[in-house]
Length: 111
Image (cartoon, rainbow, N blue to C red; front, side, top):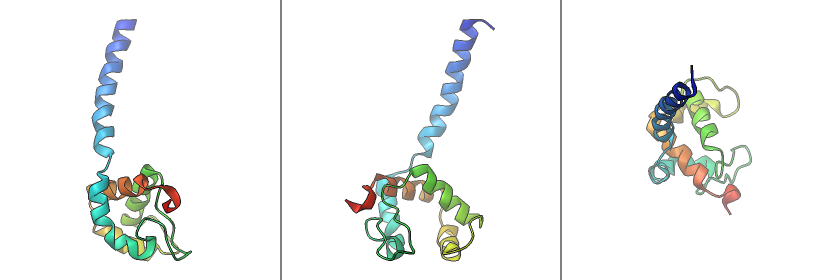
């Protein structure tokens, strides 16, 4: 393959990846609206008042998506997993992306 073929292949690869990456990003405003039920354990601004619950504010967006999907699939065990599995079961992929975007957009520690 010559350089021209590599360049064309690279452009196609970028075109295939770029839409998927943009679709993965959630809507923080929609996530904020959906987060009301989360506040009971994780705090109004993603900072838990009870030490056994993790802070979500400022957490990595991809991590939150992966964690919520794992709870939904029953792949996370122990601790508060049964509660989180119950909460995550009713979430769509868009809900999960939106919640993750919202919590990732908040300043860590609620500051």
